[in-house]
Every structure is written in structure tokens, then in C-alpha cells.
Length: 413
Picture 1 (cartoon, rainbow, N blue to C red):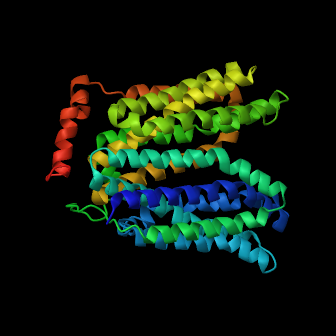
Picture 2: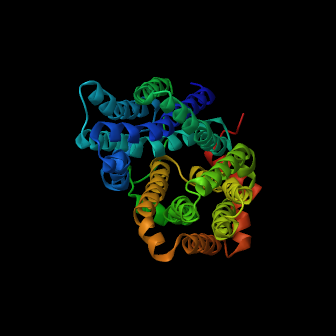
Picture 3: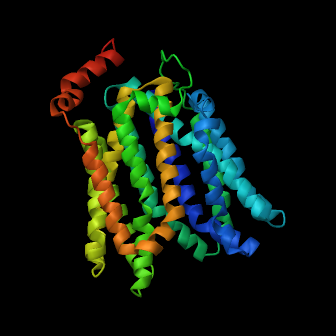
């Protein structure tokens, strides 16, 4: 067994699956529109994907505890392939309907709800076998891979669509996930031994017992809830100022480049930074960006630079939360903690996007951005530790040595 090789295989799997997801996000709405002739079906798959994710706290509670190795995760990816094939196979057999789109979303949503948190937990388990901070670095590199696909996959998909290769993109994603499943079969690592009394702890119990994780997950959920102010807000602001698509494109480009730079540095910086303060700083920086964006819409350069500054800090905050979970939990608690973070953040994003249009319609795009920024900054300030002495002790090298000795009683060779 070679944990480093397994970590490399999992990072490759992440690159393949996320490239496919970001590419088909461009192609799938076009296929749905062409096949059904109805605009409302263009978002049906994405909406259906969210249902299993939002309800996963109940139906996936015990199932996620079985996903402790590569073979189990390969099976989940195989289910995802089935979901991805529903649309292209249906088109090849004569056509699809709203039912096909809903089925594709539900199947892939179930697989996504299980595989995302389980992969992060397994990466942390494998990192623990290599040595201190390896789990943190592996999770940070996984986040970096996510952000790399954000930069190149959508333009690549746009080029393919322009060349008339919309359907081949859907087939390519299914094939890519199938290859990822084969790679996962070679990952032999299993979850670290655990002495948990409850082999499948409820998510709320894990959050109740781990105060700092609860605080970090809360900041992530709030950030997800108000994310609509950035995307929808700038899109609407651009339309209102006769620049449709220009403002949001400039801001998203800046955010993507800034977050990529932060993600590149995260594996080095995150293990050296205080966890709770880093998380709070990340969300506060993004909130401050929201506060100033309405005043910068006159200059695309300043708008992009401000968004890049906010984006830079986000991978550091996310990396700090992953580090917190991987250093303070293990076994069933670790898998539940990652699942709770994914559920609350993704659920909050979906809720925000669902209600965001109405909020912007009532308050206006600029005021909504300012209010969203103020909320993020306020929550981050409240999350900062009130007892510096205890906080330093919790993140000091001495305490890290204690954690390392507890986890690696035989020493690190």
C-alpha cells in the first residue's frame, strides 16, 4: 500500500470529474432546450441534483459510513455514470423529456451527495498515514484542482459547443467519470480505526460536540447563502447599466484568478496559520469585497482586482476548515463533519439562488451586495476567538506536536 500514490490517484480523479462537470454545465442546458423546446427544463437537472444533497442528512447517514475505501467510492462513481448516461442515451434512442432530465439529476445528485464528503474524508485518512499536515496539504491540493477546472473547462466547453460538439461533451463526461471510477479501484486505503460509540453519528451531534467546526461550518453556510448577491447582483447591475454580462464576467474572472493564486499557496500557508482566524479572515475579506463592488462598477479593472482580492483569501479559509476537521476528528465523526459542511454550504447556495432574485427585486442589486457583505463581515467578526491565550494554545506548535504524538504513537519515520 502506498498512500502517496493513492492520494495522487484521488487528485487525478478530482481533475477528471470536475472538468466534466464544469464542461457539461455549459452543454446540458442547450441539449435540454433543443430536445424539449422548453426554457424551464434547462435548469431541471441542476435543480434535481440539489434534492438528494439537501436531504442527505437523513437518507445517507449510515450509507456514508461505508464509504471508507477506493472500491466503495468507485461504486458511487459508477452510479454517477448511470445518471450521466440518461440524457445522451435517451437522445440517441429518439428523444428525452422532462422526466429524463429529472431522473438524471436525481441519480447524479445521490452520487454527488455521497462522493464529495467521502473523498475528502478518505484523502484526510490517507494523509494521516503519511505524516503530520499531509492531510491538510492533500485537501488543499484538491481545492486547487477544483479551481483549475474553473478556469479552463468552461472556455473549452464553449469552444466545443461552437464546433457543434454539444452531445459529445455529455458522452465525454460519462466516459471520464468511468475512468475516474477505475482509478478509484486502485486506491486501497481505508478509513482510520475509530472508537466512536455511534458508528453513524447524526450530523447535528458532531457539530454540537465540535465547537470550532460548528463555527467554521456556520461561516461557510452564511457565505453560501449570500453568494447570489455576487453572481445575480452583478448580472442584474450590468443589465441595468446597459452592460449585460460585462460586470459579472469581469468579477468572476478576477475572482477565479485570485482564488487560483490563493489555492496554489494554500498547501504551504494553511498548515502554518491559526485555523479559526484564517477562516474568519477569508469570509471577512470576501464580505469586504462585496461591500466595495457597487462603487467600482465604473471600472472593469478595479472591479476585477477587488474580486481577485476576495477570491485570494477563500482557498485559505476553506483549507483552514478542512485542516480543522482533519486534525480534530477521525473515523465516523470525520465523515459526518465533511458531510455536514457540504450539506449546509451547498444547501445554503441553492436557497440563496432560489430566493435571490426576489431579494434583489425588492432591495436593488447594489444595496443587496452591500448588505450581503456586511453580513459576512459581521459573522466573521463574531467568530473570532474571544480568549487569545486559549486560541494560541489550540494552534501552537506544542499542541500540534501533541496531536501528532496521539495520532502517530510510533513516531514519524
